[in-house]
Amino acid sequence: MMNDPGLFETIYTTRALRRFKPDPVPDEVLFQLFDAAIRASSGQNAQDWRWIVIRDGAIKRQLREWALEGWTRYSARYGTAEEIAALPRNQRLSLNSVRDLAHSLDSVPVIVAVLGMKGRHSTPGGSTFPAVQNFQLAARALGLGSSIFNLPMRDQLYEMLGIPENNQLYCLLPLGYPTDRHGPLNRKPVKAVVFDEKYGASWAFAEGQPERGWEDRWVR
Ligand SMILES: Cc1cc2nc3c(=O)[nH]c(=O)nc-3n(C[C@H](O)[C@H](O)[C@H](O)COP(=O)(O)O)c2cc1C
Image (cartoon, rainbow, N blue to C red; front, side):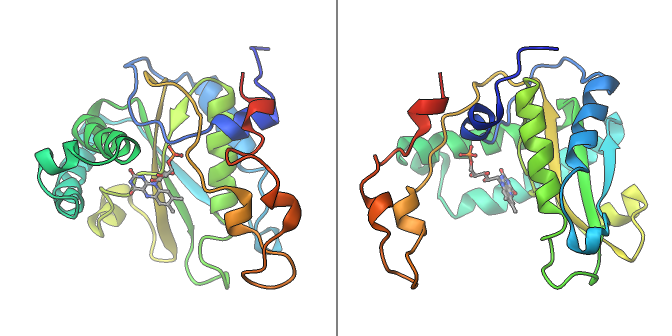
């Protein structure tokens, strides 16, 4: 067994990692991630999630092209490269990592396409994203990094990947051994998002906790 960071350290340090070493992801590791992913819950235990492992260079190059188009549109919201460079640090770093991933998508070791059954569940995605979260936590626990990356999403992906009509593509997960560090996470505190009995009513206990929550208990 490798050094297992434990559940809470894993949870507190699983951030979106978008830059990878070229090292391939061994099949035993990939299998472990999927075997953990499919332990998730789903409506009626339907387990409609389907996963496509993309390692083929031609497909990755096409995804990169679409990601770059997506990046051009997305980054325009934030202005020019100079305007992005002037944004607050967190925002700038995260945008830069999105930009770098778009540019390097063809050299990411694995891209996983995540699918679910169309129209079957009343909460679209609700029966798919718990498995995605398991996948990302398992990846982090084994020293890999990933992120949900939907900039390359296009209708043409259905044809390219042979996805049947009754399936919906929910997200793409680029995966590999990261060059950036895991965690810590930039999140609003519990008191900002959890209410006591009524929407908007503050929860006194949470009010008394540090801004950064209990991260220090878990992140070494
Ligand atoms: C449903 C969903 C869609 C997302 N789509 C994208 C995306 O298209 N591109 C991207 O770079 N990140 C995407 N993300 C990742 C988020 O941007 C990322 O988790 C968030 O910024 C928090 O980053 P951190 O975990 O590094 O703090 C998505 C996340 C979710 C849950």
